[in-house]
Structure formats: C-alpha cells, structure tokens
Length: 233
Image 1 (spheres, one colour):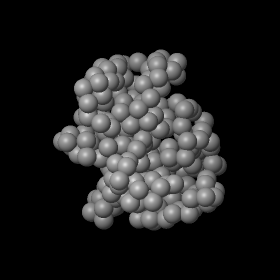
Image 2 (cartoon, rainbow, N blue to C red):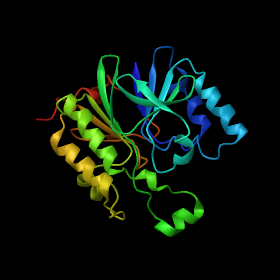
Image 3 (tube, rainbow, N blue to C red):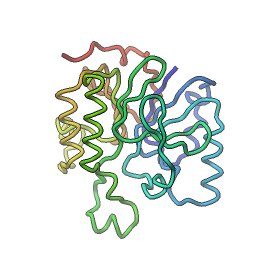
C-alpha cells in the first residue's frame, strides 16, 4: 500500500504514531515536503536517518521550505522507479524535483520546493532558514515538462509542497507572494490530467473538491475514496 502524509519538521514522534507504525514491508510512505530530518548534519541526526532507513517500509519525501538543501545536495541522485531519487539511508529516499515515478502500478509526479513566508529574504538568509534552491531553476522546470510530455501529461497523482496560484488566496489570505513555482504549478493544474493532487505546505488535513488534498498529520492511503476521483478533463 502507498500512503501520503504532510510536513514532519524533524519530529520523530510522527514515525511512532499508530497510522505509521502499522506500515509493513512493501508499503511506501510519501511525504509532501518539510521532512526536516536533514537540518544540521550532526551525528545524532545521522543516527535518526539511519533509524528511519531501517524501517520495513519505504519512506520517500519531496523537499519543502524547511529542508537543508545544501545537505540534500551531498547525496547523489540515481534512477529510481522511473524518476531520480537520492538514497539518504536504507529505505529512505528524497524524490528529485520534476520526476514521474511508478509505484505499485500508479504514477506520481513529484515537484518539491516552495516559498518561505512571514520573513523577508535577507532575514531568512541571515537566520540560515532559507535556501534559494527552494525555488526551482528554469532547467528543473524544463526537465519536468519533458518528463510529463513522455506520459502525455497524464499521471495518477501529483505530489507538491506548495500549491498552484488558484489555491493561494483560498488557503492563506495573508500570503500573497507569487513566484516561479506557483506559476509552474498553475500551468500544471491547467494542462495535466490526474486523479488527486496532494500538498503539504499549509499544515492542514483538508480535501478541496474535487482534486486537491492538503495533508499534514493525516496518513492517507492512495486507494481511499479521496484518491479515486475521476480524472480531470
């Protein structure tokens, strides 16, 4: 089975919750950004990453606004289930931005990154809590379009941290920042065919009918009713 959840921010207790503890060998847990366990690169952090990698199930995350992109870049990307991924430790992977992955006969388009909010750029850089790489480069967007073109812009599920422009005002009236990632995701929303779009940035567990699904602490099986909506036309 494949399950999807939201931001963890380095909280190990999330892995000890009943909904995740029940996962078994052959299952996959997908995390929609802000994994947070790669932050300072210390020995204690490495022990935690090894512990996660030794779980019987596979954990795969996309990057968010509170992941250390410098640390992620130290891991080499390699082909994984149709896309590219970085193996962090054992059964723990980061899904590289813009890939189309096939898991259990289902296809997933993954595109991490987003906009940090509530802090201006200089303040973010000074606090070491912001990386320019949270915004996609044009080359990453180009590769994403190439990957989608190979599947005729049709996938079963979309996994992102941030959201397309159309959802910004609906989700957070105080956040009016729009950037390259929102523009790309808006193009994706208009042109791709998919069953469900999962996102994690806004820390809510909410279905926005008919296609969007915010995830935070919920652990959603993709075969749940929310994952069986008709594909958009």
